[in-house]
Image (cartoon, rainbow, N blue to C red; front, side, top):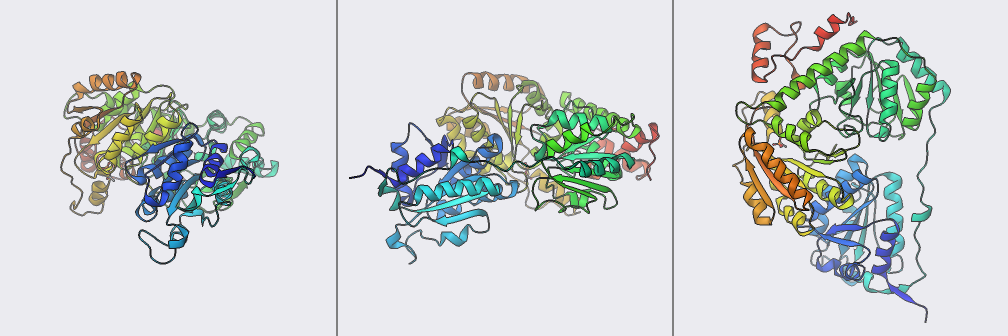
Length: 586
Ligand SMILES: CC(=O)OP(=O)(O)O
């Protein structure tokens, strides 16, 4: 008789052939035959037993965000399946190839409202790029291979639903194969000479051009900076593009809108040309002037022309096109516009440095970031949660260009920090990993601090505790509404951490911060996680989307009140730098 293999084992071997080293989940009765396969394959693929499927699902997406390789999570039928949705939508919105395996009741019970049985096929259709139920044991590894190829091709979530009886069935050992070794992604060329020249002509005619880059320029920081200097175009990045360009680059304005920096918002208000590269930034529709000339370089036809009226549209590989622009352009003369932006960045950095070095008064979030910058290694991984911490991290982390920085970008689901930290430390175990989170988000996922302990993941967890949903609080303030439903009674996160078996440190004074972070770093080096609960004031981060600094737009008392509230005495409105450099705003 021909040699056989259990279908579940063949399914896992298919995952292994694609380089999957670990997968996250929680077993249930409808996934047990896959669990028995995982037990047999333990030496080759690691099962990470999370405390909540949602954490596993988002960690799998973060694996993809951090490494470019597909991450995998699973859940059993019914509640296990529905808990995966957060990951499925994060993968969809940030375009990350991710595989989700979902249990289903045995075939003989399907389609008749059995215990925990849901009609899973339609459930996943909106979020996933591919969602199918396996119908024979023999096709199980084949459908997994199909799902992975679809996830990579469409850059999203693929879901394979597995009736529990199938993985236990034997199939011919030579009856399946994987496309992993021959898998390739299409390589786009650079834009044509004509397209590049048309873009260069527009830039040459502009007075106040900016370069706005997203994830599509990953790995091409030097190219972006060279072109920016050559054409005298200051650079703005999306939040997810933040780690690509080093903080120290003189003309890096930061990000725009609210999770953003002052120089980027100010420059965008007056820019007369935006070159939008490798980005699907949705706030472009409100942040970019409709009057500005617009060049877009994009690899996804669905995104080309989506966010703004476009003068030159280039469907192409972004870094290759930027290289071609460097090759086909002459050095622009030194520009007053560029220099005014460089000065604005210096002033903004000085403000943030002063805030991070502040030792007086109650503890705000900035000195905590000062410590993170002090300790961060050259290739640290920052797993950033959603809320005030996202905007503060965008502004304050002094990224080197070799570090990784990830969050839930467009779906913006809270609790994303811990999940991405698990992924970072599992996928890139030698690197220093920070989980930076607010207290609301930390409370949503704190059960999985235990996962850090059980798998010896030496993550430095920092909780910014202000007893409020700060980001929403500020929105309510801007709406002119009294705060409602945003306060949260304090949680002693250090005690929670200790209860989970890790070091927990509460910090209430700036003077205690350095020791706490030194202890966390010593623990990390010894292979142990730490949680620092930083009890910060509930003061609002400076609203760079509503600056009240410019005497041309605000009266003196308004400016004085703004400066007092945000400690912004030395912060200079961009208009002053524009005037000093004689840049006309037409
Ligand atoms: C969503 C939110 O408001 O979070 P935070 O309290 O961390 O700002």
